[in-house]
Length: 209
Image (cartoon, rainbow, N blue to C red; front, side, top):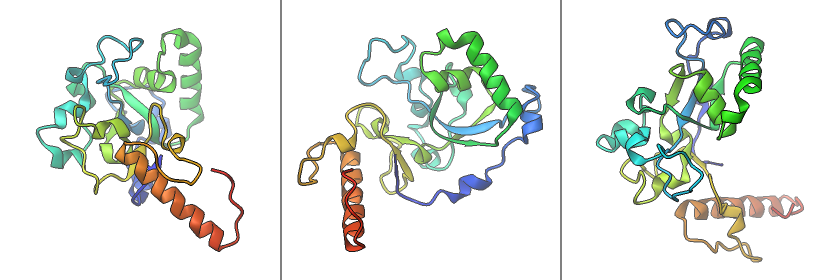
């Protein structure tokens, strides 16, 4: 990931208190945790992805007509049939009771969880999690022209999530220069080089990364 702007406001995001969240009652507990949506467009057409992972079922697609709102409000999970979250960034209230529920669910249905923690949390807490705006967990593929470019705003993104391969650190030559084409990868390389320069000035030995 690459944090571009302060996100301290997430530390005070209202969530259900653990005792309420552990009740499992959808009628009173709908804010167990917060996360960004998964993009279920499958732009790379990966054959092992579910057949219903198509743009029409993607929560982000529902925001194309109102990109300004997309910067501040997460799409309602109910707009699509999947209601699937991405596990990259989560806001949680630690709870032993919730942890026990997660472990029990994992032990019972793990074979059906194609996307690990994302499948587990999306299924166990369906309709009970808070959708964050894409800017907090901006999946790099959202910026692509044929994916969700209509809502992406470079200057509004707070945190880039480098899903899939290649990663930006795989596209750096021996001189530290960027060799790729994805603009968001270039951001990471530039900021990482700035970090290294600052560390050299302080006498910190390069860790090779």
